[in-house]
Image (cartoon, rainbow over all chains, first blue to last red; front, side, top):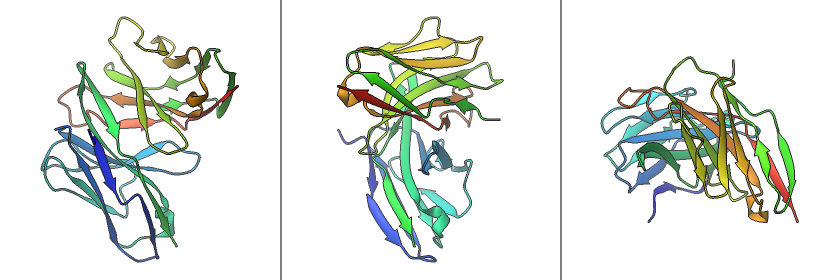
Length: 114
Length: 119
């Protein structure tokens, strides 16, 4: 009963380093999302994938790339990390629950860029 | 203009009492959904309750109910019989668009309200 699984849970990077945040869901959902959460703010959408094979930019896509590897997996890549990307990153997937499309979240990845 | 506004940065409630967390929204789309999520100190986002724009009745899920006033564009969360474990950050969020559209599913979040339940 895993739901949405994110790895890693914590990461510290130096400015300019790259890394990939992994996300997998086992609920057979079509749509997946990446959000970031900064102090004092709600979550903001970085990228989303409405279905396997498609990705689209959200509100704050600059500095990120994504890959929808298959229906289960949606990864977020930081090619050259910057201190402004220090944040908590959430992956989510959405699917039907009692006839409603509900979004479920992973536990988050806490990223610090020094 | 902000699409989701939560005007209460922090709220306090006594254990076993009810509390209302405010949320107003802004959209011109006739089809939308409103969500509430709970984020405890451990950090995960927990889905609480959903209200669709065409729903005739206010949503309820256990101790959670949503006071949906469409004309006023408000979707306040009511927690009855508060428990210590209810202490957390609460986010209101909105999804615009209809099923089948490419925007379907994307959420816009408010800034959140920190709820503290006192014993």
